[in-house]
Each structure stands twice: as structure tokens, then as C-alpha cells.
Image (cartoon, rainbow, N blue to C red; front, side, top):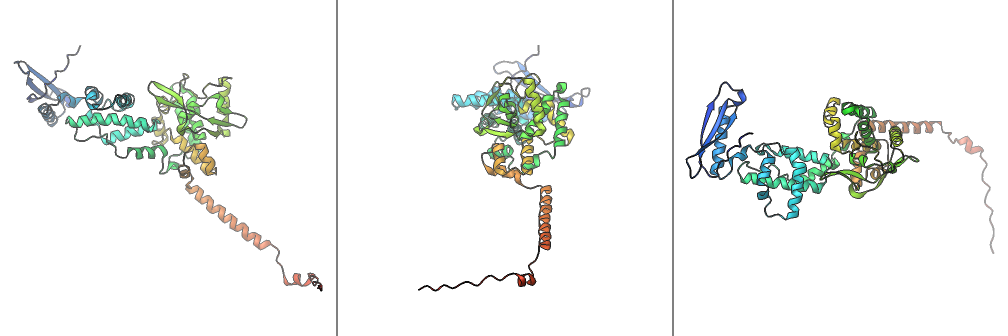
Length: 424
């Protein structure tokens, strides 16, 4: 069993030295050591750390001395965020109501620790927090949930500032809700995130199936279905047999699967908007096959994982090695949510009226839908061709139309003169 590292008493004076060890690997040739006496006794303790250079070793000793003189437990300099948060949690949350602490702790445990817990406190930057936030939004975590998660992280990192571990709080994200909105709705240019063609979608679906364990066909079906219905992955996961109407090939989209503490649950769609989505011929075959396999159970899920489990965007990403596949295909920035952008862009280019597109997408405001109507280069060229054809047809009709000549008017019968009637 490994002997526990000695704890340096707070406020103690340290002495330090560096030993050069040429026979060790380059990354650990310099051993930095601090020593101190236990108050009230003659016992001496020491703590050491291997460093790659002399400067790094001396910097480590300086940090230990400064931390001890300032009343900071020096071991915190080498703590991961998970270790540090565990040691200062009650201190960081002081003054808060119990309900708030419970929400912050939930976000800390379910989102912060899996994403950042392994990093040292001193290695966390604004960029790290920004990327983690994007990951949470990409996994369709709600706005209020992200707010509570960030609040807990901010308080822990604020304690790190007070402890002198860092000089500023890298988790303070001014305007993060605006960032959330931009990521969520892609207000700038959602069309740029869409796949260009059905062939590319097919390649993506086939690539994900090939990379998944056991070449599970269901992952390809999920991707094709999501793109052709402009639905979120959680909404695809929530689809059940009873929601599919094969008479007119429509999908009654009324629920979604979403992450919660302890797993995944079904709930209402975003904004509680129930909507009817058309199922185009390109995906009717896979839907019909799934309905046949599932039998007559109306509550059966249309799409599941290989073991029958619920699907989330994170599950799809991990099971198919999504990041690896999209990089190989040349779409390294493609996210699961971009399948929805793909479907809406294709529908807009196909001429679906904006009010119909809004209902299919489930948008709360038509201004969001209008972002998909910006013409691409092909549409602009097509508009020019259409206008030219219209003008050419008009000129041809003007040239071939019969003209009214003077001779024609000369031989036409004159109208009879009006008869006058005398009224007494």
C-alpha cells in the first residue's frame, strides 16, 4: 500500500533544494524538495516532485514556499479539479440555500467532473471552459441546467482565486447565454452546417455503421431519419411505433429523450410543440422495415441502441466514433445537431413554404426559420436562368401574336347609328 504524502502545516516556513539525477529519464532528472519541521517537535518532514528542468524545479519550490507562507495548503497546487473541488466544496458553497447547493452539486457531478475533473486547477483556462460549454449545448443540455452547472464551477474556481492558485477565474463567461443561443439556433448561418447532398449523407451513415461495434445498422438509420425529418437526435429517440402514420407517411412528433441525473427519460419536445413531420420516400423503406421487425407493439421505440437502450446525441457520438468518422470524410466540424440543419436546408431549397417549414421545424419564431431561406449560389444561378427563360418566352409570344392592320379595320362592319327617341 502506498504511503500517504505528508501534509504541510499551514503557515510553516519551508526550505528547499534541487538534486540533479542524470541517470533518470529527461522528464524527471531534477528532483525538487521542500522540508519543514513539525511544530512542537524536532521531527522533520519532506515533500518532493520530479521536474524536467532546473527552472521548473525551482519554480515548484517557490510555489510551495509561497503557498505555505500565505496559509494555503501547498498540495493544492498539484490537485486536479475533482480533488480540489472535493476539498473546498463546503467552503465554496457557503451562504447558499440548500436547494441551490443541491442543483450545483448535481451539475458538478454529472457534467463538470466528466469533462474537466481530470485537469489540474492551474491548467483550466477560458478556452477550456468555452469548449466544455459547447459540448454541453451539443448534447442538448437545457439552458437552466447549464446555468446551474456553471454556477457551481464558478464558485469553486473563485475559491481557487482566493487560495492563490490562479490569478483570475477562467469560468466567468460574460454573455454565455448569448453564446448558448448562437450555438443552439446557429443564428449566423445554419445553412453552412448542412451536408451538401444525399450521397454525402449516405457516406456518413455507412461510415458510422462500419466504425460501430458489430456494424450496427441502426446507427445509419438514425442518421438518415434525423436528416430527412430535420429532427433532433433526442426527438428521433423518442419516436414510437404509434407515432408513425403509414397511410399518409407522417410522423406525429410529440416527445424527446433527454439526459437527466441517473440516465435518460422521455419528456415533451422543446417548447412543448407537437408537430407533424412528413416522411419522404427515401426513408420509408427503413421505417417500414423497422415497423415490421417491431411487430404490433404501439409503445415500442422506432430506434434504439444495439441492446435496446435509449439514444442520445452523446450515445450516438461514442458508439459510432463520430469525431473520427467525420474527420475522415472531410467534415471535421460536423455535429449531430447539424443533421437537423441539413434537413431544414434541403427543405428550404426544395421550395417548402416558410410557414410550413416553421411548423415542421417547431421553431417558436419565424425569424429563426428565415435563416434557412438565404439563397445559395446554385439558387442564385437558377433564378437568373428562370428569369431569362421567362423574358425569352414573353418576346416570342409578342413576335408571333397576330397584329391588327388598317385593312382589317377598313372591312369590318360599322356599328349601326343610334336611334333617337323623342320624349314628350
